[in-house]
Image 1 (tube, rainbow, N blue to C red):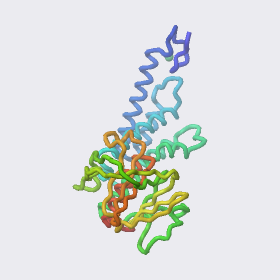
Image 2: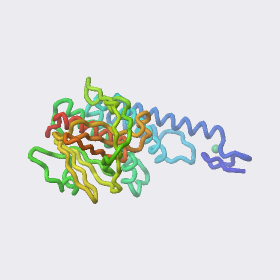
Image 3: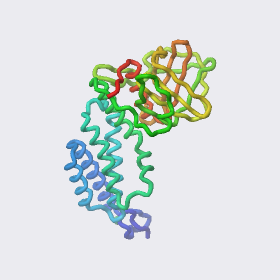
Image 4: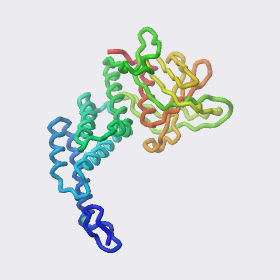
Length: 307
Ligand SMILES: [Zn+2]
């Protein structure tokens, strides 16, 4: 006789669960999803408290802890944030308060875990795409409203090591970036979904469908890319370069599989320079690429000003 994976009691020959336990499990998960949706709808501290009470009160199977419910709520949170960040319904439609609430919502769920996780940073890394997107969403919202933006926090040696030009300040940094440089002949296809970068301003990925005859060589070194209000700094163990926006003739997103951006685990930015050269940055996360490229678009248009 095998034990039921939900209640631990014997389930019968060749069975690993009771049907009633499975349906209890599914209805608990559905209730968590509903609770998360409601909390996002109300976007206030009272809603968070209400969600906590809901999670405490659910009649959960013996195998599920309260923390399991918090983790389930985090996946629902991720789905909600992804639906904002991967569609045209960009975070511009959210208010500053709603964006801050979504970030606080996640931190609150983490704080409910009992016992606290030994490595909380791991959890933040796991959800870093969503957290970055929300932060960038707020920056884009500010730019579009003509407000000044906060520069990146000082203290990160990579951010601090740059000699910024007068009036220049760092806006966003992404890690795990490889440099791709052109060498000979190769055909690459551009094209893909459109994203709204500002009200009334849609931008189709790979606006020009033209094909480039170039071979790309990807640098083995991984580095980091910092966007400032005036240009892009890149640095890895072997190469350091700075591309001022004024040198960029054309920019586009580099997307291996535009039809399925959510599942694509890398994308990047291609810059065609006024001197005829091309540089491309492969970013290890499609989500972060989008964030970076949207902000680059605004920097190149001279739209990013300090607070
Ligand atoms: Zn059972």
